[in-house]
Amino acid sequence: MSEAVTRTVTTPPGLLASLDPLLREWLPRQRWFAGKGRPVTGFSPVAVTELLPSTAKLGLYHLLVRAHQPLLPGHDGPEQPGDCYQLLIGVREALPPRLAPALIGHVTQGPLAGRTVYEALHDTRPADLLLEALRTRARIGGLRFERDPHREIRSGLVPRLVTAEQSNSSVVYGDAFILKLLRRVVPGTNPDLELPLALARAGCLRVPPPLAWLVADPERPSGAPQPAEPYVLGVLQPFVQGAADGWDLALRALAKGEDFVAEARALGHATAEVHTVLARALPTVTLGHPQLRLMVDGMAERLEAAVHAVPALRPHASGLRSAFTALDDLAAEGRTWTAQRVHGDLHLGQCLRSPVGGPSHAFGGGGGWSLIDFEGEPARPLAERRMPQPPVRDVAGMLRSFDYAARSADPPQPEWAERCRAAYCSGYAEAAGRDPRTDPVLLRAYEIDKAVYEVLYEARHRPEWLPVPMTAVRRLASSGLT
Image 1 (cartoon, rainbow, N blue to C red):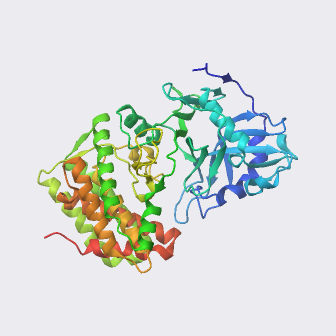
Image 2: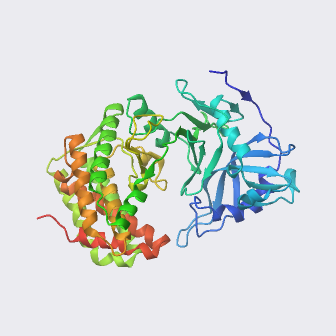
Image 3: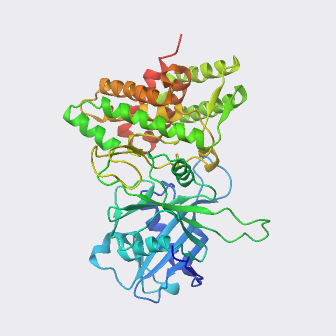
């Protein structure tokens, strides 16, 4: 392997101030911006790194910035620095037509005055630079481009931006690699790197292994006794060629009137394989009554907040609470559960199906299910996302996903969902040696917690989808165990 490339950089003073008015307008329009509905009132820099000098024909800046936003109505206190976002800003004299959709704006003041700035991931040269930096283990300012020394990273591959991303951005290089860049970032160990690394080192072939990753080391705050924690910014993994995600496959099966039972069973088997390896590779804990009480209290608090925000939940609140009470009662009687690291946000869209009998992909044999995107629910604190959980949490997420797919069909096909749910649990039991349905109290509590989250999300963002989780809420609220 070649020696790491180290380069110090100097950032023009006033750079962020010159971009400020443009970013205030552009950032809230991005799909991955989490602060929708509140204006951006300013930015504070976490780290600003010049990757290509702006004096050249093409300039490139890497920004970590906090977006300042006013508090939501009803919340007292001063405005606080908000979420930290990773931005890649390209600089040109003028944009060629192919980059018109990437336009951020024209700078009128500061060191970039008279230049045009744009979202650089749309451009091949900046994308090439990122892959080459990862391949050569570059150090540029506070950015560290790390890689697995035992895995090859080819150069000269044509990059293309994936346009279907939601909370992050991805670039595919040829048909060999995919670079996922996290947009909303927090300091600390990110499970989207931590868990796939642990699985790869344990020999699990169900998850694409990290080949390289990008980390930022922000400057130590003045007076701080120790350096700030690094930010994990991106992960390069093998691209699963010819794969389709589980959500698309499920919708296709529904549209054609085809069964999905065999696929659901195989997906349950794959999920259990990943859980089994995670339990071996990382510590597990035993949850007794004190730990279960904290978990149940969290579920109850989320339910109360959702009931307050979505009046349609109120008639079902008592039935939903009964699930949490039943789980707490079991723990009070001495029942314990094993908790471990889990995916944390598992659904059909986080699963890839490669062609059966197709060519082997870079990390395993040909054909089968793979699990991706171990970041967890980005809205939850990082410490919470890294906490051990009962594996049934992931199972509940998948069961809800089958229900979503079936309810999105016209007409809805709840029987299709029930067959898939049963097959998934059976496949899980085959690999894990235990069927999640044999712990119905825990499974019901986690399904309700997920459905309540869905109700709140749909009410805020997609009201036309609200009937989907509300149907589940009615079923789960009336399914109290006797």
